[in-house]
Length: 258
Image (cartoon, rainbow, N blue to C red; front, side, top):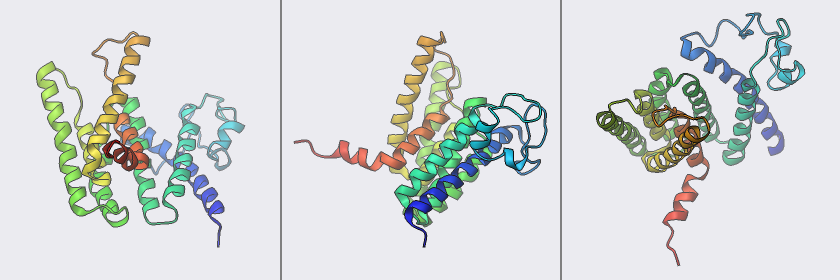
């Protein structure tokens, strides 16, 4: 049998390969394009990428961040996402081991990576990811992650209800849209997988992160208070924090003080 070390290496490398696929999803889903065909190609000259130029992270470094054919610049984001996915594969395998929970949680985190970068680029969260993700991740959480059906159901209902309430009243008070339906669907999806007890933590952490980043844009980028910062990435970051540390942090704050 493989040792745990070798399994960790294998899943980490596989995570980098999955990250290459996530790059395809991030680039094509907002455009309504197929994520299967055509094969990967240079975004500038359109030349198909050779298999030996499509090795995650390594090919980017060997080519100096340029297309072999047109020598056009390749965004540093491609290897970054591959590395990020590999790191999460490593962390999640160390936490969950060779259990059914590991692939379920890994798919969940990969979906959050795709949503975060799409929202950052286009300020949209595609319904194809969240509306399909709600039932899929609810089932995965119940079957493989130890969540009860009631927890998943309440996570969806409360998650969607909270942000819908906030969105409606924010628009009524300010006269402009504060968050879209994509954020509402995303929080419902997070609740479906993490359960309703995660929602307060996710909202507090994401709001804090959003406030800090928004303030930074105002102070250092000269933006005004109406500058729209996509909220989806902060929800996703908060969900990942909860996934790794939420239970411990909640127990820490709720524990009796001496």
